Length: 484
Length: 106
Ligand SMILES: [Zn+2]
Image (cartoon, rainbow over all chains, first blue to last red; front, top):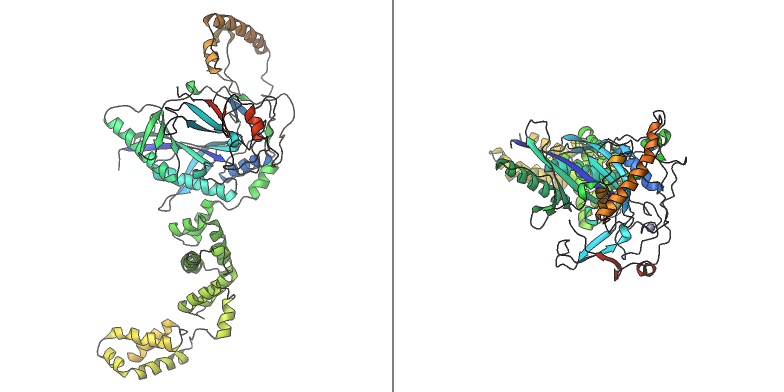
C-alpha cells in the first residue's frame, strides 16, 4: 500500500432530458443541423426574455431528493459573467448561492460489494453553452487554430451541475461514484447520461496527502475525460504523477490539466479567465423560485427505488452476488421482469438462475430482450414452481423454457397435456430400475466387482427409460440401493 | 473580499480598481480615462453608500423587487428562427456556422 492517499472530488455536468430548452421553446435534441434549434432567447438577442422550463426544475428536485439533498424553500437564478464566443449573452444563467438543492449524498458500491457514501456539496441548474469547433489548425485544437466555428443548438439546454465533496480515494471509487450517479439519473428518467454524446461530462479535482493526514494537498483539476475508462486512467495517471513529484522533492502546482486519451497523459492547460471573477448577481429577468413543502413531499412519495436500495435488496434479501445484482440493476427492463418473477414465484435464487442463465442465453441467441420475449413472468414463475414441487426435473424445465420462448404459453398446461410430470412415485421408478438392471447383467456384475462408476450408465438408462421424467435423485438412490 | 448575502463584492468608493473592472469587461482604457472614470465611479458608489446609514438588520435579503415567484412555462417546443435569417445578421459566417476570431488561450 502506498504511503500516500488520494483525495478526489468530482464535478459533473448533466444535460437534462426535456423536450424544449431551459429558457426558450427550441427543441432540446442532440445533434441536428447546426444553428437550426435557435431563437432570440438562446442566441442572446437584445430584448429577449428567458422563462424557465417547469419540467427541468422538477427534474432537479427529483434528482435532489434521490440523493437525499435538502430542498430549500427559496432559490434563485444568477448571472455568471464571462466572455466566450459559445455563450452569446456574455453571461451564463446559473445558480450561485441559493441553488435548488443543497447537500445530499451519492451511495455507491465497489466490486467487492462494499456500500460507500460520497457527500454532495450541491446540485444546481444552469444552461449549457453552444459548441465551438476550432478550425484552421491541423488537429482541431485551440493551439494553432486561426478561427472558430460556433453552433448554438446546444446553447440553453438545461444543465445540472453536481459537485461532490472531496471524499473519493482512488480511481475505483471515483468511477463507482460516477456509475451510481449515472444509474440514479437514468432510473429517474431525468437525463440520458451519455458520455459519448456529452450529456454527462465530468472533471476531477485530485490531490494527494500522506496516509493518515487530515490536511488537503494542492489539487489539480483534470478535464477532457470522455468515458468512464478514461476517467479511471486519467485519475490513476494523475495520482502517480503527483506522487512522483513529491518523491522527487518537487511541488504540485495548482492548475487545470487536460487528459489526452490517445497518449495516456495529462497536459497543463493555461487558464482562460483571469482569476475566475465571475461577478455573480441575481438575474433580474427571472423570478425567484419557491418550492412548497407539500410539493417536495409529493415528489418524495413518487420516488422510485434507488439503485443502492435495489443493490441492498438483491445482495441482502435475495442473496445475489455483486456481479448478478449489478448486471440486473444496469438492465432496468430485465430487472423489472426479474422482480415480477420473484414476486410471483417467491424463489429469488431460482429466478436469478433462469433469468440470468437460460433466459439471457436465449435472448442473446435470438436477439430479443427477455422482457420482450414470449415468456411471460407468470409462466416463468409457474416453471419455477413446477421444478420446486419436483413435478419436473431441470432437464425438462430447460426444454420447456425453449418451447415457452417459442410461444408455447403456460408450462403447467404443457406438462398436463403431454404427461411430462416427473415420476417420483418410488414404486414406478423402482420398476424402471429393476427393468434396466435385468437388461444389463454384465454391467451389474462389473459394479459388484468394485467398478462403482458404472452406476452412472445405469442411472442414465433409467432416466432414458422414463423419457427424462424420473426424479434423478430418486433414481440414483434406488439404483445404489438395488446394487448395494 | 467581503461579500453581501448575494456575494457581490462590496466595492468601497475609495478603493475601486478601475483597471481591474475594465479588464473584466474587456475594455481598453487609457490612463486618462482610468482617472476620469475612477472618479465618476467613486461618486456613484458614494451615492449608494448612503444606504449603509439605514438600519436594514430586520429587512430580509431581496433578490428581486417584484413579488412574483415561480414564473415558468410548460416543457413545450416552439418554432425556431430560420437559419438563414440568423446567419445573415452575423458579422461572419462559414457555411452553417457562426465564424469567430480564434479563441485565445491567454
Ligand atoms: Zn431558443
